[in-house]
Length: 488
Image 1 (spheres, rainbow, N blue to C red):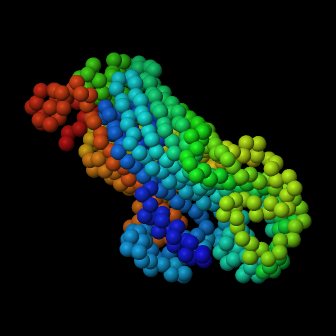
Image 2 (image 1 turned 90 degrees about the vertical axis):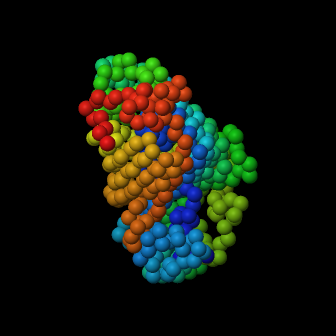
């Protein structure tokens, strides 16, 4: 398969999959705690719904800084893909030749039926779903050129000594069950302090990784490569059946809320308060997400550390579909040992996050700022680094309708404008709105959707529910006398 066809398939699959990097537009609404727990488990407290039931959700995010598509929008590519056609030609595919190192990042997710319960000082959640990640980092420029032009067909880079170091590639797929509990541990005047934790059980499906510590080579011509040194570790795992011993993960979060009124005796979504809510003026959250590993059994592991090998007829080399990592197995006498001490584990894309959410007007219009910083992976481990990001998201939220326009900086330098809308139970959004609507340089794609059934009030709050349906004169309708009360 040539590169153009491969790229076309990648773009079409990306745009038509049922599955965002972080789905910033749908991440922070107080009406959708089944989403916000993925960035901070304590955020499910003081939700504006008593019960949030997620029926299904899915999303895909893909980004890279090497290859892009010109003269197309994601909407046109998706539309053509749905019809089984494509207007992409070879000249539409272009390559960025301005970097010394390149990267690629992909995240897909599916959320099965999940629920969040939030009442008083307590909140809990049960989430079921699946995720997959693929990450490539520090691919050197000469390797990118060979990918673009082909190794045997690009003599401009022949007879030159090259060295690649600290190249990391990892991919994993797994199902998970998540249990979350959060508690408001202190309420004093207008201040609320909350903490939460999530414990995840993983069921591994497939994974693979390669750490290339040093690769020194020279391409002589279209049939010979001189390998002067290769030091690398690689692992490959594919479970025919889901592995129930797939490991564990944890999330931890803390939230501080500055309320608009005294909250000492505040019990949100509880009959104790007449099922009313006290709005917050702002809240600050801190969290660490995806601490842990996904485990695989059995695995195929190769540790390489050899010198001076003449690779003949490399262009005709067949890749072993059952174990792609054994390419140089005949050259390594001690292939079962390497730097990685636990090769059956691939570390999750752990990240820390800080969130700031400000109530601009009427407890309807908010602005959110979120920073996400991924952790690097130690040299003696396989794993993924979560992409860094900084986002600013203004949003309007109500029980029936949410709308958000997230602006984010992918890896702190690549700007993205997104949009997300929830109408009743359905949410649809993207972090790459410009690429969807207009012809532009497409370095990736993003789309996500959710179907939810939010239950706003506790069953005991019958008068409150009648008041909401019956209009302003009905009994049970509480009055919001806060400085930001809604007048519409």
